[in-house]
Amino acid sequence: MGATTSKSLVLEEKNLRNFSGLVKNYRSTSIRAAVFTSLYYQSVAIVAALGIALMCYYGGYEAYIGGIETGLLFMFISYTTMFFEPVLSIARISNQMKQAQVAAERVFNLLNVETEIPDTLEVIEKYGDYDNPKKENWEELNGDVEFKDVSFAYSGTNKTVLKNFNLRVKKGMTVALVGETGAGKSTIVNLLCRFYEPTSGTINIDGRCYKERSVGWLHANLGYVMQTPHLFSGTIKENIRYGNLEASDEEIIAAAKAANAHDFISKLDKGYDTEVGEGGSRLSQGQKQLVSFARAIVADPRILVLDEATSSIDTETEMVIQKAIGNILKGSTSFVIAHRLSTITNADLILVIKDGMLTEKGTHQELLALKGYYYKLYTNQFVEDKMKEMKIVS
Image 1 (tube, rainbow, N blue to C red):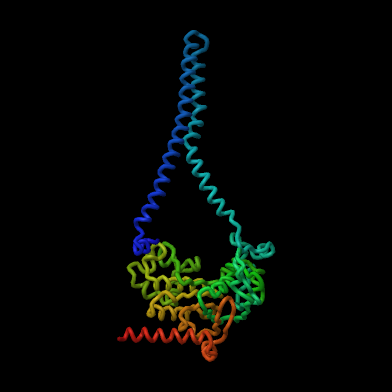
Image 2 (cartoon, rainbow, N blue to C red):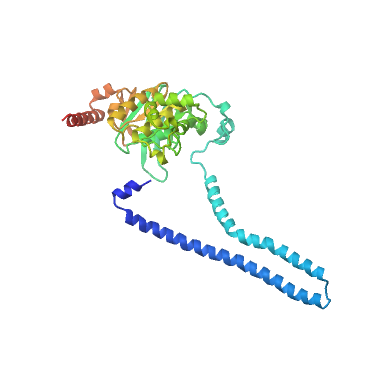
């Protein structure tokens, strides 16, 4: 995954030394384990062989002098052989048993990890949990969202990254969040998605605290498009269907058309059956982003989060994605974390976040009229864009 970075920084020799050290340790440990396993098995085999040999010697002598019958000697030898066979089998598979024990411990350690955002027993009883959801009790999510005096600090730290945040968003609104890196924009949407829970205050969805419903109910109604999209190994069709595992091929194609991804997919040799590679390595950044938009569309979310979804792509692809965003936002309550302010000029509400606090709020025109932080930020980006256009023309 980091081959390009390693080569660009000329780290091949250092990585080779580290890898060689790991391989050397693994090799010596494996040889030592194989030696102990072989010694254990051979020791048991030798004991078994000696036991049978002594029985043959002593029993043969007794049979020769008439002390026991030959049939009795044969029976004892057979029973001794039958006794040692399972012992030898145990010795042979003991190493495999140890390996299986280690693997089982890792699996159970993972299964026993407690969720950081647990539902209450009352919620689980009514709505179920992730493994056994009671979808028949799930209410329809409309999309009204309200933050009431919400503050948040990460566990183990004393720094409050969000302070007394208040916001009311009606169904279908598009809310854009702008501000410096580390201002608290991602914290707000992560709290909304219930990846974290507020240190104080409440978050209401459709007039009720979202803790009164299950995490599964909320996540089933969420769509999240990240700045760096992640695609899984498989085909384009499979990656789009990941948003809704029950989606038909027709619904997948319709979602791709809505995301303006259908054109580039159709030009590929295998179309929707094209393998994307590990992490989507066979597609460009813009193509991966369009596929991730199609995945969000096919999920039909009631609340949509776009986390700087256009900040790492070229201007031409951004225009294509802007059309896709317009299709996605229809009918959904949307939260857009924006790096390029030109992408949020049509938002219903723009929030300026600074040091975990809401400092400015309004539409694009209202914030420009204030001539505050947003005005300066937008003006600087506008000048930079014009200078880039002049350089391209020249």
